[in-house]
Length: 371
Image 1 (cartoon, one colour):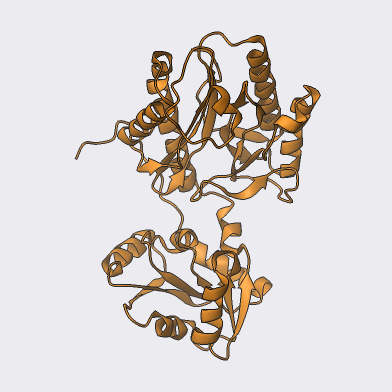
Image 2 (image 1 turned 90 degrees about the vertical axis):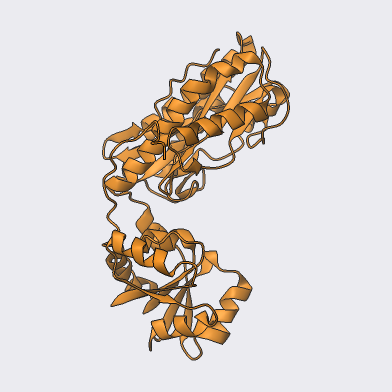
């Protein structure tokens, strides 16, 4: 097997203490047991990466119930993570195994944000019988907010791969590819450099399409005079990166240059506002004030950013109505934008690690804008 072009040592993740920290939250949440059904949370707590599993977390340990496809995999991954999790393989009656794993707990928590009404009803009526079932919100996600050194290494490597991939394929914009062709080349390059996958469907939005914040790559051919919004990321060992750059193909018009300048100033103001103890809404306000002062308040049509980790969009949310306060070790994006149809749009985004006195950008691609 060919080694990836980008390969660097990654510190181990601190998986084994996570169950203990979750147990500490049980009293506050009013539960004796938590049934974890969200696969991302399950991975975070146990190290298991399969597509089917239920983790029953008790104060004295945890049990993973999965099916025959994943028994051996689960044992290997859980041992590697050093977590105290028993593996139970069951193909036909997982409900009984989940009930047994919960023991005689009186109050059983379900992840309310990750279960449909029908699934929750099945647990309440068909699995736990006389036990009191309690909806919970954000118990595991609260633990995931602060990244350990191993997690930061993986996000940093994902960001580095994205940086290098864009540097390699960026000259292709001058050759008039379609949005779809350029996106495919960018995605392929990230994988060749060592990414396990892309973080999400890469956005390549050119010309009037750049005024659509979540445009999907089309067969439109990129041409001179276009602004091209590129929003993409790489996936490394389950962890995501996220970046956006806007590139002008040929000399930008006066309006385009003003859009580029305003968004660059806005993004810089947002990055400067990021530090531990700052309300996330203040970061949003720092970005939004610059754009509003330029007369384009209505053209900034989305939030300023979001957390990044095992999910491409996770807590904390960085927006007007966010009630989050940034903390050391969190990873967030700052990505203001201006969208003026049919002239195009501009968005600039970095992935940042929140620190006590500011932030460190994991995204290193220069913000120069003309090719």
